[in-house]
Image (tube, rainbow, N blue to C red):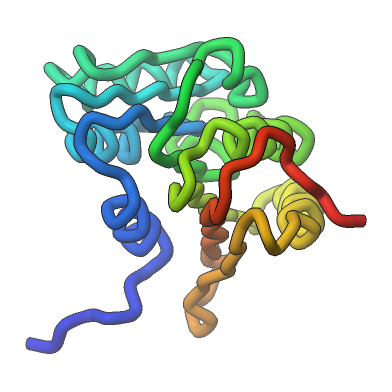
Length: 198
């Protein structure tokens, strides 16, 4: 049986986080959804770590809480936009994860992540992120509004100062039906102000 080297986007995102986030650290799931990433993060940081999970839909947080079970003890579920992350999270974080788009199996698929709040959240999280920390963003653009968010986000991360962060794009290009791609942002140095080069 062959070993898969080129993982799909979501497993690769977790692989990156597992290499850069350590037990006992604070992390952020910026889009809790149905709780898959929140559960992964809670398990990964261990009993001395903590996860802040954001979503704007109560349905998402309810699903996440059910999935977490006893892991809710090391998790704070927040019904608010990830754009307001700095109002809840203080101090340094080890990493953060985003899954953009809409909530799978939602009753209302018109509720989607949007460029302005996503970019605001990434911008603030970069300021909180430890040096050598990672932010992963799984980008879905096959739904209405997805292309606009994708383009604005790519424009933003493409202008982040190269001395401050590395930004990589990872995707499997022979999958059908608008597969997601991954943006990974690695923080290279300590800074108090995120520099965007125009």
